[in-house]
Structures are given as C-alpha cells and as structure tokens.
Image 1 (cartoon, rainbow, N blue to C red):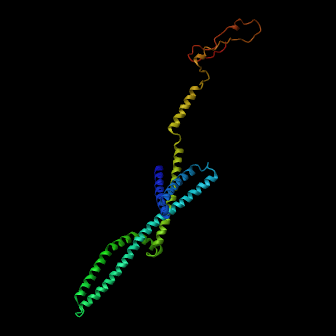
Image 2: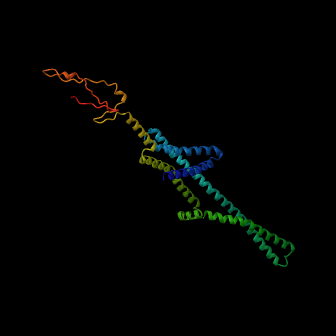
Image 3: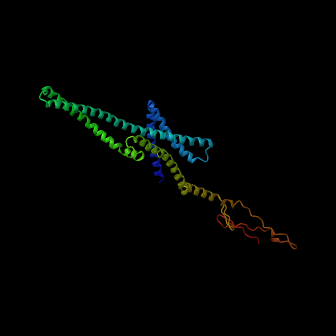
Length: 301
C-alpha cells in the first residue's frame, strides 16, 4: 500500500506538473523553453520541499519552516494556475473551431439562399414563353451547378459541426443543469469544472506524498531493527562476553599462564598462650593445581 501511495503521488504530480508547465508556457508564449525549464524545476522542488518539511518539522528552525511552508503553498497555487491555463486553452481551441465552422456555414447558407431565389426567378421566367430563351436556360443550369457546389462545401462542415456538438454535448448538459441555459452557460460551466479540478489535482498529489512518508515511517517503527542491526548487536555481545571474566560463587576462571606466577602464601596461625605451635610455619598449598584452567581456594586447617 505504501508503494501504491507513492506511485499515485508521483503520477499525479507528474501529470499536474506537465499541465502546469504547458499552461505557463502558453501564458508566457514569448519565452517557451525558459518557462518550461523553470516550471519543471519548481515542480520537483515543491515535492522535495514538502517531503523534507514533514520529516524534519520538529528540528527545522521556525523561520525556515515558515518560509518553506509558504513556498509550497505558493507553488501549489502556481501549479493550479498553469492547469487552469492548459484546460482553458483546450476549451478555447475547440470553441474557435466550432465558431469558425459556424461562420462558414452561415456564409454558405446565405449563398445557397440567394442561389435558390435566383433559380426560382429564372424558372418562373422560363415558364413564360415570351421570356424563355437559350440564354435563360444556360443561367438556370449555372445556378443549379452553383447550388450543387454549395451543398458539397456544406457537407464536411456539417459533419464537423455535428461532431463538435457531440463533443460539447456533456458540458451543455452541465450548463443547463447549473445555469438553466445550455447556449449561454457553456463558458461558465467550463470555468466551474476547471476550478473543481484545480482544487483536487495538485493539492491531492502533495498530500499523497506526505501520506506515503507517514506510512513509511510508521512501518519502520513497527518492524523495529533490521537483520543487519540485530547481527551487529549479537556480534558486539559475543565480543563483550569473551572479554568479560565470567564466574560463579565457587569458581573463578583465569588464564592458564597466570597460575605459574602465583606464589604460595604461608599459612599463619594466630598466637596462642602456652606452648608455641611448631606447625604454624608449615607451607600448605593454597590453590588447586589439579584444575586445568582454574584454581580453587582451600580452607585453612
């Protein structure tokens, strides 16, 4: 789920950045490539700043934290403006094509109406024997050919107009639903839809990136130390155990070579009244030399 969140955040950010950069380049059309370069760097910097702010919010100085937060918000606003410019340009382009077809269709329709009126007039004259002539017949044929040419020119324009009407049909329904006027409310409906997209597009990408960071940090806390860290801890403990002098209440382990350097200590008895103890200066072994790696203290007799 964490990787899916990261993937969605990166995908949304990439698409929003593309729309924003193209939209800004359309606004500043005189410097297309410099604006594209600037917008691309700003988009990447915005994501890095948002991620860094979340991870270092507690340790970052107040002024730095405030400025970076303000910068991220301004960059989100710039991205939204670029998205608005990109989508608005797409709508304007389709509207221009529709308007151009409409104007051309109106012109051809007017020519067709004039030609029909002329044909009707010529046909009326041709019915009168007094005005009928070969010249009139040629004019009638020319007018009929003109009407045919106008019909051929109108046919592709009518097809494009029907296609554009079908493309704009959904937004017409929205305009009619919201504003009650399908013809005059199209531009308002388009602006409303673009504003809604702006509100959820780039902000959602930034918040998804922060959410992915939260999930990743929580996963590290739940999992705990890695296998490498556990192995390093075990190795350190084994080294410490090897250096330590492990003992119990009856046994002390020492190096074998240190046993030879230990001298016997004479056993002395406390002075008593009466005859002196002739055995008081006798040397008795104090340590157990039978043990291979240890010695044991014997009690005094």
